[in-house]
Amino acid sequence: MRLNFPRSPGYLTTEFSIGESNREAVKRIEAWQSWHNGSLALIGPEAAGKTHLARIWAELTGALICSSDLADASLAPEGPLVLEDVDRGSHPELMFHLLNRAAQNGTPILLTGRTLPVSWPAVLPDLRSRLNALQFVVLAPPDDGVLTEILRTFFKSRNIRPSEDIYPYLVARMERSVAAARDLVDRLDEAADGLGRAVSKALAREVLGDDTENLDLFEG
Image (tube, rainbow, N blue to C red; front, top):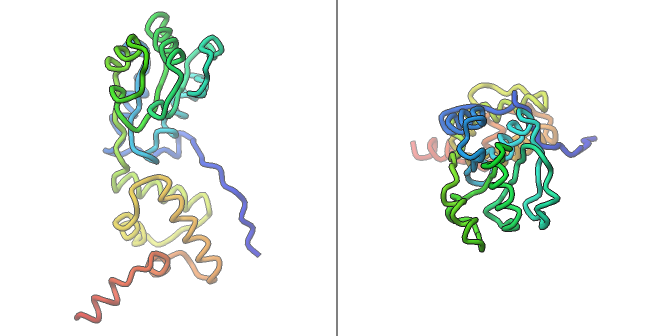
């Protein structure tokens, strides 16, 4: 009988795979003490690793995660803060207060979003000017090397050791995101358990509905 216990996403530093797609972002996060005006925006598409990297920075600095829908700026926690998904909307007084605080007394703040700060909503003129001047770093979608290491990490968390040929096969066919990698490993694990088979390239081909090999043989 298979017991499907929910798996919470892991945000350990050791589980963050570094490659060309995110190396610059990692450098900027590690150099947080040199941020201009004490603030930085981490920009990237959905499931590119923004939350993971933000949690690593929070652990590094002792920062707290602050809800972007907090209306009363005076209730914002003291000390370093992470404010996520700012591009989806946040209270303007809160944003203005936090950015001013970072610039005036050096209390750092890391903001995340999918779009550049110049496009973030801001009804206050002074906030608009601060967002336009906010420094940012772009976190690109995972490259092949990063995706491979992400898959390895998810397989390892399930005590699965597939053959090496499965990695280039999956990377060439999957959506380039951490979420897609996690979902794919879940599907392969469930299929292997249900069929009583090992996780392999052949199983992956079945799970993905990939008939290219059979088609090539037919055409040959």
